[in-house]
Each structure stands twice: as structure tokens, then as C-alpha cells.
Length: 251
Ligand code: ADP
Ligand code: MG
Image (tube, rainbow, N blue to C red; front, side, top):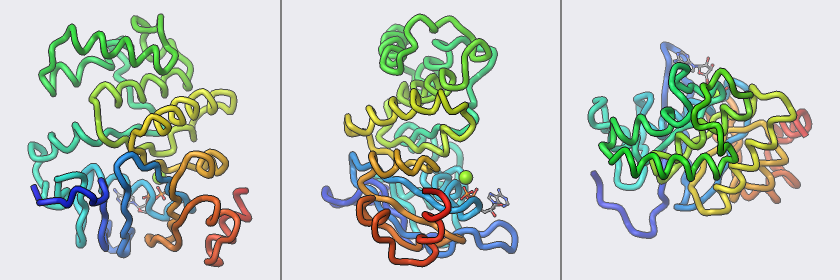
């Protein structure tokens, strides 16, 4: 635990370095996200976007620098048991849903709050049903993940993240594996969360969505944040040639 100024950003990375073997994947990444902020990380494949998210929730240890989330100095949390309290605050949603296939939708939502947080089953169940309504899946509580479409499964995954009542949700290309007609139903859920003030960090290739929903965009290339700023400025008048080239390709 560290002392944190009340006005400090909720998430703060300073000069984060990370190598896998001899390859330096993050070369001094600094970024911050305010409480209630919505930021998008964009950039070419392999530029380190997922690695940044994994640093924020302590899925990987960093080599140098600091990562703070609220009062957690994440880089000091080396043991799994120390990471448990952080995982309550920082939820993550992945491209491949990662639902438990042999559990119903409702069980997918209730397992962790009951078993990990020790909350009362009746309370958790009520909250889970409300969350399923929120992601427009009322009536699917007894279905198994395999019986649902990709877009429905991803909405279950988002509801499952919310069931932990986190302060932050990290989204890693959560629409990338979906058929085009299912993308908007998932983006609509994220848009609503963002409007309600949930702190969100999104890695996404949906540039129009990023432009609409983000307070700030971070553009990564080869392990550095090349440029960042509000979407209106960044998309209309990018400064760095690497960002210009990237936007020319994806827009
Ligand atoms: P992005 O999400 O921007 O596509 P990643 O953060 O997943 O990029 O990966 C950045 C680089 O780090 C890639 O070259 C990738 O191959 C490498 N990398 C990521 N995770 C590992 C790992 N666990 N072991 C070895 N290399 C990794
Ligand atoms: Mg990635």
C-alpha cells in the first residue's frame, strides 16, 4: 500500500519496462487514467497493447518502473495471494470470452463473488440477474455458454467482470473474434458502462468507437507510447508519422 493524493489518477504507469527473453516489449511506457476515465490503446499488432493491460492487473511482473492502481503498488505484488485484492478492483475481459463451459450463465457470474469474495449467495444472485438484464440477456441464466452466440457470450463475460464490482475494467480486443453483426451489441454495453462512469481501458481496433467513447487515446508502436491525446485532436491532426501511417491504414 502507498499513500495516494486524492486528486491522483486512478491508474498510473511510470517508465514501465518489460522484456520477454531478449526482446524488450515495453520500453518505458508511462500513462495515467483518471477515476471514471475511458481510454483506448490503439496501435499495430505486437506493439505491446495487451502487455500494458497485463501489467495493470498484475498478470505479469515488470522489469523496471512503477504501476499503481488506486492504493496498490502493483509492481510490488509478486505473490498470487497479494494479487487477490487487486483482482477485485481490476477486472479484465478477453477476446476469447474465457467463460466456464460446464457452468450455466448464472453460475459463471456468481462463482467468483461467492467463492473468492465470500459474499452471500442470495445477494450475489440478485446482482447477477440485474447484470444479465443490463447486458440484455434476461432469460439466458440457465443456458450454457456453448448454447449462446459469440456476442451473447461476450456480454456474459462483461457481466461476469461487473459481478466482482470492480473499479476498473480492462477490455482486450473484445470484439475482434465476433461476427460483424454482433460487434455493435457488445460495443453498446461498453458504451453504456463508459457513460455511467466506469473506469475503462480498452484495447481496440474499432476506431470509430474509440473516437466516440474515449477521453484519451494512446497510440503504441514497438513498445513505446508514440503519441496520446483526446480523440478529436489525435485522429484529425496526428503529429507523429507512425501514427499518421497507422491511421491511413485503419481508417
Ligand atoms: P499487442 O497486444 O499490441 O498485439 P502484445 O503485448 O501481445 O502486443 O505483444 C507484444 C510483443 O511481446 C509481441 O512481439 C509478442 O510476441 C511478445 N510477447 C507477448 N507476451 C509474450 C510472452 N508471454 N512471451 C514471449 N513473448 C511475448
Ligand atoms: Mg493484444
